[in-house]
Each structure stands twice: as C-alpha cells, then as structure tokens.
Image (cartoon, rainbow, N blue to C red; front, side, top):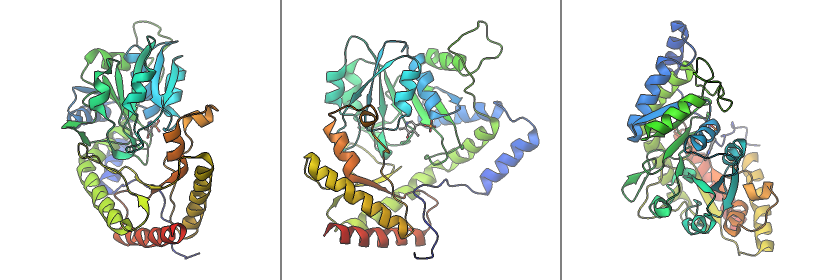
Amino acid sequence: MTGTPIIPHSRPTLGPEEAEALAAVTRSGQLAQGPQVAEFERAMAAWMGLSGGVAVSSGTAGLQLALSAVGVGPGDEVILPSYVCSALWLAATRIGAAPRLVDIDPATYALDPAHVKKAVTTRTRAVIVPHPFGLPADLAKLRPLRVPLIEDCAQTLGAMQGGCPVGSVGQAVVCSFYATKLLCTGEGGMVLSNDEAVLEKVRALREYDEQSTLNPAAFNHKMTDLQGALGLCQLNRLSSFLKRRAEIAEAYRAAFAGLPIELPNAPPDRTHVYYRFVIRFRAKGDRRSRAREAWRVDGILARLERQGIQCRRPVFRPLHRYLGEEGYPETERATDTTLSVPIYPSLRDDEIQRITRTVGEELKEALT
Ligand SMILES: *Cc1c(COP(=O)(O)O)cnc(C)c1O
C-alpha cells in the first residue's frame, strides 16, 4: 500500500458553476422537465450541428426510442457490434427486435463495415454504430449500405472522420450523459436528428400524460430540469474538457512510447477525443496465447489497483460471450489483450505523473 488515495478509473468533472446551476433550479421550484431541458436540447443540437434533440432519462432509453422512431419493430433485425456494453442489446430486444452481432475492426475497435455488409438481410431495419472510446467508426463505408444508421455517440462527441463530425450521418444520433461520460447530468441521454418526424416520434414515446391516444409503447423516459441545468453547464465547458483530454493523451503517448504495447490508433482521416485511453498487448491469435494474455492483464489490473491506480477492461464482457456464441475473433482478442488507463479532465498534474510513472513501471516489468 502506498497510503496515497486511489485514482479512480473515471470521475466526473464538476465545479462551482454546476453547484450554482443546481441551486438555481432548486430555488425556482420547477424540477421536472421544463425550460432547462428545452434549452439543453436546443444547445446540444446546435453544438452537434443538428436541427433538434429530445432529452431522455438515459442513453439506453435513447437507443430504444431511436430504434422505434426509425421504424424498427418486433422481428426486425438490428446489426450491432459484440464488443460493446449490454445497453445496445437491451434496447433492441426490449422492442422485440433481433440483434445481429458482428465483429470489430482491430485497428479502431469499431464496427467492421465489411462484416456489417455481410450481415445485412432483407429483415435488417437498422445498424447501431457506436463510436468507441472517442474515435469515429468508419462512417464513410457504412453510409452507402442503405440501412438506417443510429449513431451511438455515448463515448464520442466532437470527433471527425473524413471532414464529417460524428452525428452527421445517422438518421438518429444517441448521446448518454451518465455520470462519467464526456458530458454528464448524472443519468440522462438525448436523441438528436435532422428528421423532424423522428424527433416527433421520440417525443411521443418519452411521456404518457395528455396524449391523444393510449399508446402502449410510450412510457416515462423524461429528463428533469435539474439534469438539464447540469447539462447546459457541462456543454459550456465541453471544448475545454476535450482539450484537456487531448493533453493527457499526449502525456501518456510520450510516457508509454518505449513499451511493447499498442497505443490508441487515430487513422489519418479521423480525430480522437480520448473518452478512453486503451492500450493493447501483443498476443498471438490462438486461444491458448490469448487466455495467457487475459490472465496477465488480470494480474496487471490487480497490481495497479494495489498501487492506487484503477485501470479497467474497456468493455466488461462482449455480448457474444454473454450469449454463449462462438466466433468474433477480433472482439475476443480485444477483450483479452486491452486495458483502459484513467483519463478525464479533472485529473490533476500530480495524478497524471503518478499514472505515467506507476503504469509505465508496471508494464515494463510485466512485459519485458
Ligand atoms: C454508456 C453507454 C451507453 C448507455 O448509456 P446509459 O446512459 O448508461 O444508459 C450506450 N452506448 C455506449 C457506447 C455507452 O458508452
């Protein structure tokens, strides 16, 4: 034990602005969905260059409503990667759709467009495209597939691919404002779009009161004005948050440059906003080497935690493993050979130094 406080894997970045904004909403007496939520929707849509947004209670709820709004229903197929949190699978199955899992591109951890193309059938009604860890998926190759794309921007805001910002291609775009995302409201999410019909359908599904019909698909998925006020503060600070993340990523790149590991890849046509800083160990493709590698990653995670640095596997468990499916070799490899180093704007310089020193020494010892 070092006696120094633990550096958590993630932490929100909150200051006096947020405290004052929450106090002001409390004083106003208007707590539920109201003017702060409406303003946050306008500001977020403007920031993303889209015509409108509908705030909801979580990213998962946003995915579910976005799928319904683009026309996905019972029995329809929805393509999504296996290497992702279970929220995507839950959103699709909740509305009776059938998720079709595909493998990732090892260079970016994002959906591999070639695999998506092969998975498209006459029953495919949507593809959920997450932009993992802060890097855009290959939108240029996914766009020509002629299937509605739902961009999952929960981990990536403000990044570009081939001159297009994330969020500019999907028929619907979903954000999460969970406590440790790029921009946080505690819990919360938003569906954004340039298509007013999509936004209107999401609005009709997020609340039950004073509707013209009794719609069994509607529910209560609303955001509160407390969260809306928090979101507005965080959005004002988002550019400085992203700048700080890029600075920390540069410090990590410099510190880890000599180690036998792969650092986050940013192909020349894309920018990375470093929601996560994911490093990968080199392992042979066979199952036995990967199992050894997974075991080694477990050891590294445990030893770093004992030294006060909490790293994590970037995806807890890929979907195909939950479902007991075989295949998905690149998802398997990513699961067994990667770890995610803490990166967030509220990391202090002394914490960054502790991370580069401790992680650097641990990796050197474990890998050489
Ligand atoms: C966090 C996250 C979600 C789910 O968002 P919640 O607000 O936690 O429901 C969905 N997709 C991705 C890629 C995420 O990172």
